[in-house]
Length: 492
Image 1: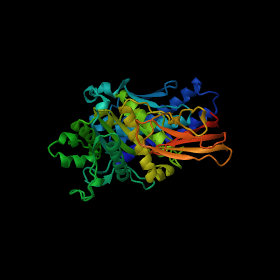
Image 2: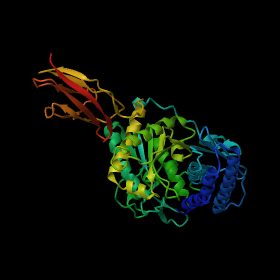
Image 3: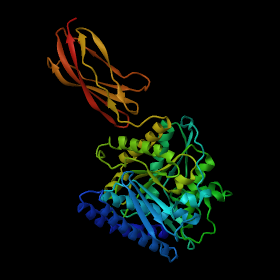
């Protein structure tokens, strides 16, 4: 994908040289609130962004200089970049998506390095958001039906082969700097998520790409490696409005832009209740890593879905040995992706990890990580759809108990959070007096509606005390911190 890769690389490389300056600005300032420091940083950013935009426009055959202004609101963790006359990406440029989204990612990254902690990067054009310039292409999303009534989902997994113009050469859409090809990898994540959504959420799941290994007639590559555009063309040859929206575009990457539109067009055609897009991320700086989720800024109601998915991913991924500290962004980020904009239903993009970071590449190829990540996505969706908050799995304290000799009693176990059943419980001996007379116990609980409890008994004829340690782990490997309590065997 020559055009896409080039635009991304130009922006990122320019800002790569900005980052040491940003970092040194913080090191020599007594406070990140120093107005003078902000003025210097913002002026530097304005020059760099303007230079990268000029190069980007030259790559598209347009020679012009565009003024750029940058403002930061540190309290809201927000940056606003305003482009002056001369740059207003319209329909055929996918509203600048292929240039602006990588640019926003770099601005967030390097602002974080400078201590600014920017989450939201908004682009204005002559003082107005892109939606104000093209309101007909940014309609309000349809009123979502009750989440509890959800029955169908579309899982869209990454990109795939695309034909360039006019050569008709076939290329993958995404780079593979460390040898991991997102276009081939992400559908396996989609398979995992589809099974989970069907089994745990009870949804009918549609896929935007084919999973057939048969050859695609035109390219000769397996259908499973082709982008959604060609799969949907085969399904709906008469519906060019789904897969062929830009037939007269002169851009070499015209079908890339059509592929971006085809996926949400298909979701709208099906009338699904939610669209979940799966990708891996990339950055020229190999230190950038972790999981992120994006929603569209014109659909802020989708942020809750994105936040819940991140919470679910954090809980399940961090429960797996070796992934306890895997980076996962705290909040969903507002962006301008066409997949989320065009889909009239709740729609988010899940960037599972970075294919440009060695540690993330190793994780992405690990079936344990893949399973945990997709379990987290499904759980986050399910909790959001059922109106539940994603919270930490934790056992409630258990009170000390006295049990008369030669009798037994039940101990009820209460917990917070939303663990995945079945639950495994272990009651281990922390201390036993007299030693050797206390027997540990393990159990399994299958029914979410049944109480979780176990029996303690005093079969001895002599009084004594045992301190129990109660541990609980759910079906996804998420463990609650253990709690302890005392059982005293007493004479009646």
